[in-house]
Length: 197
Length: 153
Image (cartoon, rainbow over all chains, first blue to last red; front, side):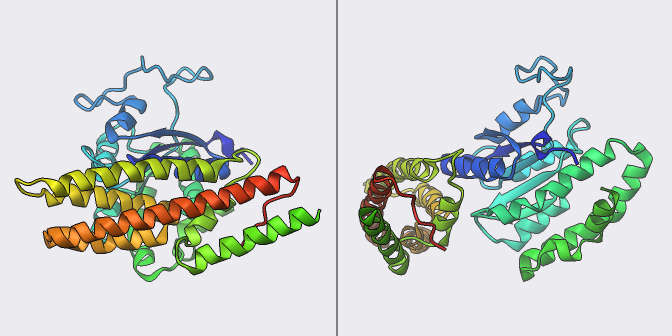
């Protein structure tokens, strides 16, 4: 089983306290973490220029272990941020051909159903209510695993699977937020992944 | 070892009272659980960041509410929103609850109500800061005496 320390999470939050907290939570869960305090810094780190959407291969954060820019396996972002909101960041990531496969998770201190729906519809994998708990982070690993497994599959197959599962998972997440049910109980996709692993 | 046990009991009693009085909630316990050998000062570090942040926000609110030309309630609300978030993240329940009321007064553009809430925030913040510093001191005493800090569920 691949070590979890291979998973690198980019955490975005304008609050220094929340950044410290999410960093500790992620490290305790054995993820590698980078924290930034804004959406624009997040895009910079991901190598995306806001205007032209082209990866800048000259980013200073190139890992010495590979020839590509630093691999980010998941972006977890606060919703309410000055300037670029978490929703704006989510949109930019999903609209980018190079970044759209990176799973994005939104965090918010406010339980607003319309906000949650909007984010899930835009492609967020999860919507977590703050304060985030260690148990919430258990929901992240499957999304990162899915991306790693996808990398070994044919592109056509991936798209079909995504289209089939997307609406279902959105409904489940919304349901989960409103009814407090664990998403893991009602997500058949998860069982499929477990079987493969 | 009797000194250590005494200190540990003091710590448990003090911690329990803070929870009972609603000064701290379960989120603070979650923070304590995140502290380990890899991050031995985690709680103190988060608390310090919170104290700094809180003071800055209180000053912002005070300044905004003092504007004679007209109070920018959106600005006040933005600071209260931030404080509500941080206090929630650290488990400062009473501070958080004042913020909730505070936000309603901002929405209603009620300057008097806002000023009252600001006073309450200042009061609750001072109380929390003192109590947490006492708690941290107790922890230090236990460690210095060679004991370990009790885990409270």
